Image (cartoon, rainbow, N blue to C red):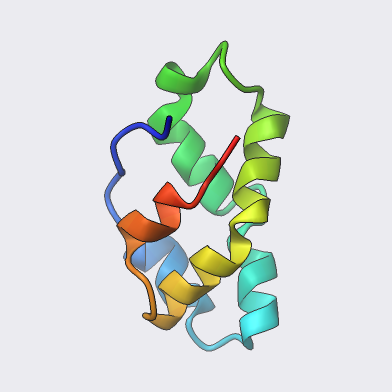
Length: 86
């Protein structure tokens, strides 16, 4: 149900999180002003009426370790985005 994968936010999100400990990286990656906002801005039109902003935030938070792995370079951006489930 995930729309097409948006461009990888390397400068805005990945680089600032790079030096953090894995636990902090996972927590900060899913801060509402981070990845959830970025992804919602790209997917809002496809997801409105299907999930609310709050449900979307929860779904991204459940995938936080996948996004932490993306920051660490152990998974791809596409795979991290595809891990989001509603």
